[in-house]
Length: 476
Image (cartoon, rainbow, N blue to C red; front, side, top):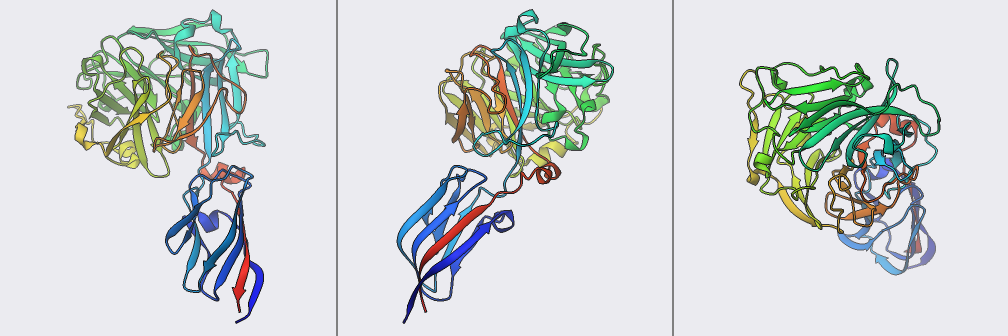
């Protein structure tokens, strides 16, 4: 039987080939002996791709963007065998990152960029909805509670001009809500009118910012849906519609019994003692009351549904944060809790993200009922060992990824990004787009969210190629 040295396979694969997780490279025909196999990934890192021969993994393809994987030798592929490339790096999820920082340059910063799978900033994108960089017009030293800021957002309105809105926590019982003048980071002037004006100051409450730029609430993803929210001591939910009232603390935006009104609030407990913990993640108002540190309450800001989750764990007393992170592709969601300096406890939700965000029967008028979930309801509870974290509530604030992971600060000031399986993906000492950061005692947080399919297509973010060449001997 004759043999011929030839190119056995040569193709460029993309999402049309790989979105189902595999592509057959060689199968059937004549017996073959592979002498050389080359794979190049010009667009993305490969972290979950491998070669499979007859159902057996014969080699992991771990590549940095632009790198090449080579395999040399004598791999026999009989006519009865099948060689495939298997991957979970597709479908590719394009991610936008929203960052906030009390930066080392003396200003507050609010910025956004597009992130690739290795944590790098994608260049060449000029969409203002995806790439932007704003800063406070006034130096941080002139702002109230400047060392205790835990969250912020930027908004430019026709009636109020350019402003930064921020909330602070004193690491005990006090929270405050401010706004101050802001501007694009490349500008020297602002249309904002006031410096460091306090909107609200409360003891034993939890505040949160619902930022339209970092929410699943995409059908209404416009500035009008930017809110500051608080639960009052009687369970009443109140909100400040920032776009409508950019320079005055006028309440509105939520209404009806599903949210709690003046006479009918939610079932207790309320966040009414020292160390109340609460923020808004993915349009969910989340809080842990000090009367029950091991239980979390979650309020859906879109439809008013209300949940109690028993956790049997509590954030480290005094400076432990938590976050709610969503894997939008897998339709899963997770709670991450700062349990101690080197441990984050992960809770995998007992039902899908679709069920969580669309449920509406959990807080009906007039009884203000809620869905109660016991500890055994969690699908998984995992203790994730992490590098030594910062022991300060402001500086140890958590962030999220678009795939259900968590971001956090470690003791040297680096930001670490971890996936939902507890694997560290990457870390950096300043953001890869603008170089924003913060010293170890100041807030610095990143929130990841999927880019809409239309935006991804416009900027080529859903395209990623894989070039594969196989040479060897084929019997003829």
